[in-house]
Length: 143
Image 1 (spheres, helix red, strand yellow):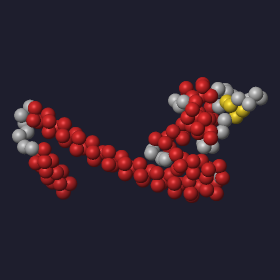
Image 2: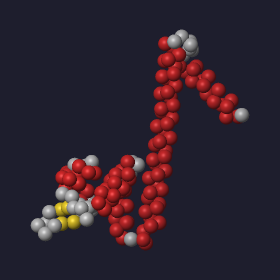
Image 3: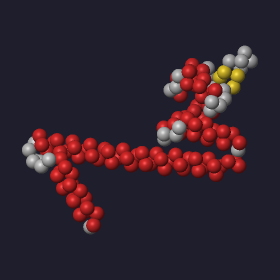
Image 4: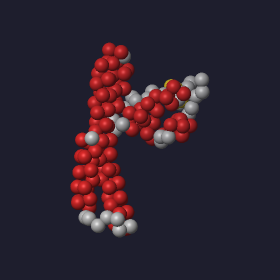
């Protein structure tokens, strides 16, 4: 089993040693200690931190991650609570994605409108352009 020092581990997982120590204080990770008391990490820890970073990447708050880890430490009796927590985070993340997609759609329309203005294929103002697109989308939805 390969053992990694905190600096090696930090490089592998893409975090700072400061962040790893913070995660340790929050009981998110529990490194092993050698005979001299120095912390070390294993490949198992790499996978665990990777999972924590996925949770963080969904927008899960630090308090939610801590709660998840606490529930996980209790064992299988908390599976339904963990599932509920993850489902809540998933719903929130999907809502944020939908909002971003809607904002990106407006941005894309604005870029298309600018392109049309530059090549003189669009003469209407942006609000009329959007109304025309909406009518076209509404017609396509009824087909």
